[in-house]
Length: 186
Image (cartoon, rainbow, N blue to C red; front, side, top):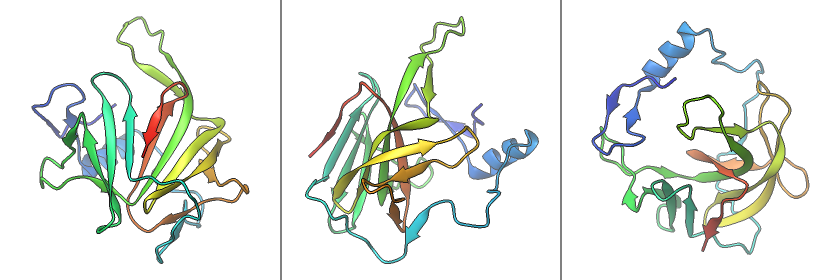
């Protein structure tokens, strides 16, 4: 269901799109593109918030397979996490700027191989219900719980006190990680 705007020369997971093409596709399919609530989807703080935590997160490494791995490296100067894929800076094809995030949310989910008869190894991810995760920002992380009542409901990210987390203003990446995968944080 990806709308191909272009194809990179990297092979494997090489299609990309534009927000305009994605919106056009969603409108043609009558997908819900706006929230039914007048409240913001997530809590953001304009003022930079540092987590109260002893857990340091300067380097995050997620190995999905031998071909697909993601790494984030924290820049104290810029106060963001720069992204790498397969050990190479992950850059925008059009601007050549490296991708980065202010916040990273990791959600551990149950997954299994689809039995669609095509034997391509595609995965189903169970992202409804509840599970564990991590919230990473400004060089630190905390453990969180995620909750999602149905496929159309908002995913809640809750701290250890059951309160919804507050994201720092900026780009947020959500990494969906199978339960049996290890996320290395240094």
